[in-house]
Image (cartoon, rainbow, N blue to C red; front, side, top):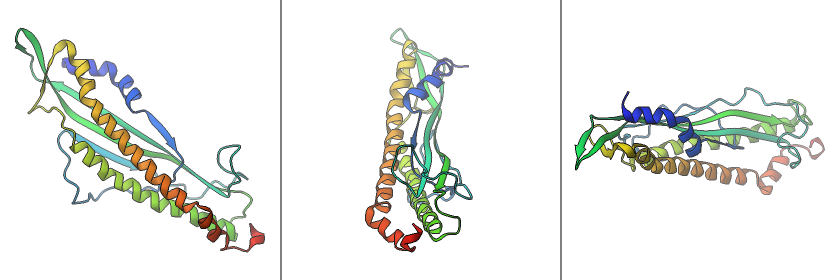
Amino acid sequence: MTRAQALQDKRDAAEEGRGLGHSSSHFLIQRQPISNPNPRVPQLQVPYYINFRHVAPPASPDHSLGNPGPSGGADRAGYTKVTLKRRMTIAWDNLPPLIENGVRMVPLYIRSANIFFRLEPIEVYISSRYAVDSCPYRVIMQHEYQHVSAFVRIFRKCWATMKREANAIRLPTADSPKNTPEANIGIEQRRITRPLIQSINKVRNIMLEEMRKDRDARDASSAYAKEYAKCPSDEW
């Protein structure tokens, strides 16, 4: 095991937890594998690997709650929730140490920088006040899954955004290592990865903001009025 690897093994959990962790967000995402990269997006630079994955929504909504969603909130006919997670792992390595001006230097580099975004679990609710196959139930179901299509589009677009962000950050590789005083390896590792952590959080915030705007537009009072008009008023 190299010096760089040994230091990283001791810090992996703490570094990931402080830098990234995970956050919850109330958006519904439908699983759709990102298997056909956009040819206009440039290929990833070595040593990056980026993976976005989201689970499928439930086959049928939870119909057990009269007012789904957080307690004490508004009177809701339907509710959707998904948890957004992001994570980064780094595989560090180094070439044989060398002496520069009497200082033992370690040619430090990254074998792989792995970035993961996940959307899981997904929860979908329709109020138990509305009978299955009733007009309101069908309208609410359609409304919730319109959110699904919009959020899938946003999620897929942010995969390409993360790719561009990563390509703009040059990391040390075996062909171009960063010569680092042996005593400063930990400090240098944190300095190297800081811009990448910032870019991951940037993409996460872009994703959430676009989802929020789309959600707010679809859930505006004027949009809801059109939904309610689809069923007789006495059924609501």
